[in-house]
Length: 99
Image (cartoon, rainbow, N blue to C red; front, side, top):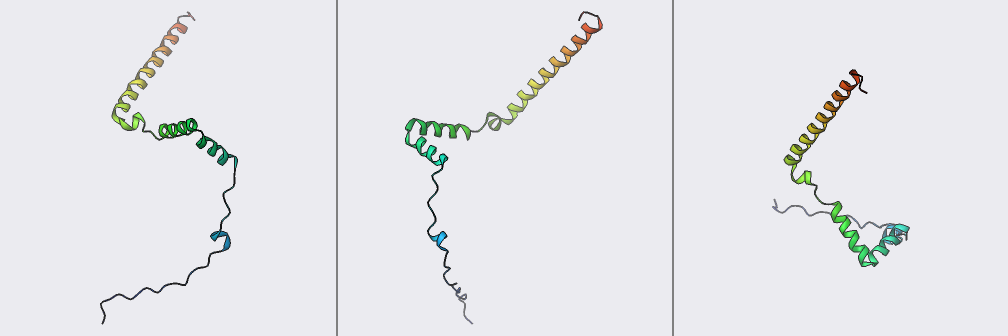
């Protein structure tokens, strides 16, 4: 009994259709033309890279989740208190016929 594993049988070569072997070149759409124009102008290309970097940045709330949660809670509590006190003040004015 031999200790070597059996060799793999090779499958015959697959003939690809013509459209897969020689695909058509990509169409020159308006988007591709504009992209080439932006890449050709250094200022526009740099602006595009800065925009992509800005879009992929990490948000403050992702870097400091605990601090963001505390600040959000305080802001919501203050706004809710102001709204409730303002409503009670208006209700007081209405009941005393001052409005």
